[in-house]
Image 1 (tube, helix red, strand yellow):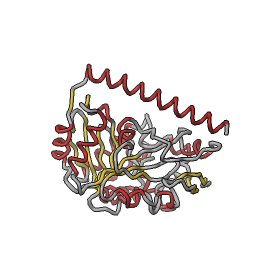
Image 2 (image 1 turned 135 degrees about the vertical axis):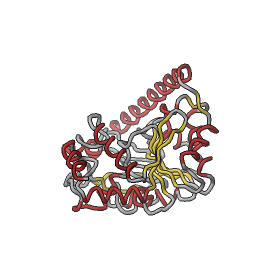
Image 3 (image 1 turned 60 degrees about the vertical axis):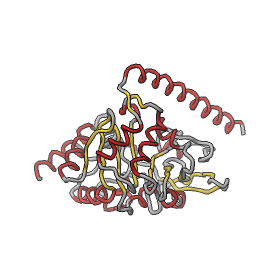
Image 4 (image 1 turned 45 degrees about the vertical axis):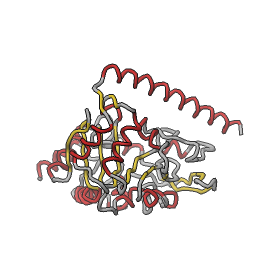
Amino acid sequence: MVISTLRTLKHGLENALSALQRRRRAAEMERTAPHATRAQIAVDLKRLGIVPGDVLFMHSSLKSLGFVEGGPAAVIDALLDAIGPDGTLLLPTYWIPGGTLLATCELPDYVFDPRQHGTHMGALPAAFLERPGLKRSVHPTHSCAAVGPAAQFLVEAHHLAPSVFGEGSPWQRFATLPQGKVLGLGISMGPVTIYHRVEDEMGQDFPVPVWLERTYSLPCIDHDGRRCMVPVRPFAPEIVQRRIDQKGRDDLRQWFARDFSAAGIKVNGRVAEADAWFVRGQDFMVHMRALAKRGITIYSTAEELARADAGS
């Protein structure tokens, strides 16, 4: 009981500190950055190629847009304006209190509760969690949230999936939708999680052994207050160090951006002050499978990339 109370207090202090830091950053942005509006962002999204009825799986950097009048809520409104009432917006709203999957799996007494826990993914996903009608998946590390007609379908079975990105997960279900688009606002091709769906799908045929042997079972509380146990298999730490989202892998991020663009599946543009891009979800999966069969993955070394370029 004491440990649980102290953890709750710690989370409260962390959330308060994060909120204070966000307010300070917003004040600085308002003074120094170009301003953007909901209407401008919606127009730019449509110019990029986002259309009514799209299902967007978005990864973003709020500050890259400039100072948005109305804050994160205005960005979300603009996205919903662009996709219309028939579209669905899906965001990662991860809560990983240990900092990594492995460290979180080894936390004593950790129980994820979507009614209590927010997200470590920044101001925009945090604001998204406050949207009326939002649906959020029950998962101890990689919870996702969605608004729109496909929201329930995308998130309802995550806690029943055999792995984070497995059958029934938001990634697996998103990849079945022909109207799905992976959208990046102000980010590179590094922090994009649909990569991991290909790893899970291919299993032993994936060129790199990315997972540890052990699968943990972590407790969660669902939206009705019922307890459930959810399987989580962490990434192998030594493999993570060379992944596309790591600081030293700008070479890999640039290679993937060039390759996806050359394949004609990555659409590039600009939204407010941010570089923006999208790839259709099904195209993303097909291309990643093809690259994996050539031995190219988001863990490829510089030497492997050079050999791929020489052989292309």
